[in-house]
Image 1 (cartoon, helix red, strand yellow):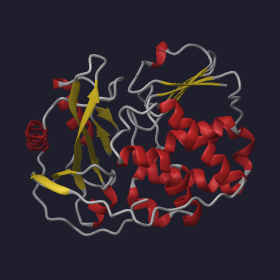
Image 2 (tube, rainbow, N blue to C red):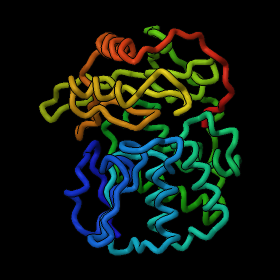
Image 3 (tube, one colour):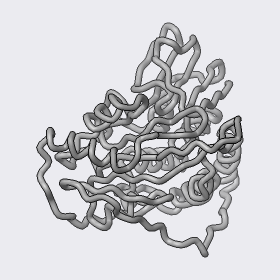
Image 4 (cartoon, rainbow, N blue to C red):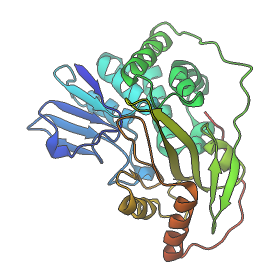
Length: 315
């Protein structure tokens, strides 16, 4: 099995060669061509996240039902818990019958698909915490410290896969950074029933706990070009607590933004800015994004609402 990581690349399903596995957005939406041995395991475009399994869970089901990953080339365009665990499963298909692995896939898949609101309800809290805070720490650290945009994703994937090996096969307990400060956010824009926040970390669990169920989170980015110049952009994530939250039609919001800047995309409850091969994201400034979303929501008929506190835990 061969693994190819191409940052920010998306291709049509028809462009995949035979014996291909596209993971988590490399192809937009789930699709299968059994005759050509082509598969897209995805839960973003073309599906409802509330009733669609995450990529790692789709891969586990396919392996249980007979998929042979050995002759495949695996394609991915980003590194996160869902994609890394999916690749690990493809590298260790014999592990799909291990009850701990089954529980981990279910838990990671549910947290990835439904967000931090699902974390209090995972099957194996200790294993799940050790996965997110231990095995996936290299990815979390790269995002936290601001160099994810330019890090070698292939090397990052390898490091995380090795840590999952240690977690599953040797029951490794990774050290936890006790001195790390709690994440924080700044509300910069208040819309009609939604907010925009600036933060360099994943803060959706905190935002949902604080009662905000419709959120745009963003932070600035800079990438050094081959010429030596710095290219400035903005990373945006648009999310609502679940598909059960009304009045914040994310696919329509993404479509409006994509009409102005190609590459915006995602699913029914979460999406975001373009992911460019050089690591840059959107060139739309926050004020303009706010105005575009407000204009779209006025068409959707969102009613103003106060935050309603709902319990959740950040993984």
